[in-house]
Image 1 (cartoon, rainbow, N blue to C red):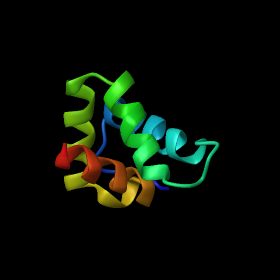
Image 2: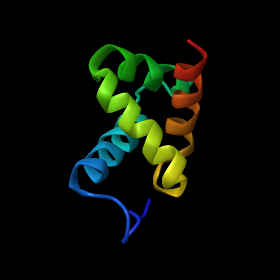
Image 3: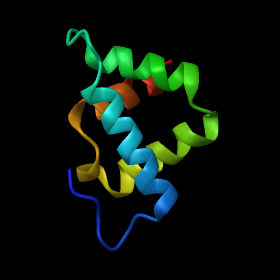
Amino acid sequence: MTLSAAGLNYEQAHLVKMANQIAANVPNRAEVGEQVANHLRTFWTPEMRRDLQGIERDYPDDLVPDVHTALEILRRL
């Protein structure tokens, strides 16, 4: 992961780092996206999730694939 040099502010970069770390540290590697979605739904505020969705739209390369999967799952709920 490389953070977009010109785009992310500190708060956005921190959300990206946290989301990517959550995905990387899920102990059971089966259905990582579902587990990340559950974590974001349980522990993140709606504002944090909205901000992460905006980052996904504007800077998709900054998020690992499992975070993209998690956000897609959250959109379907």
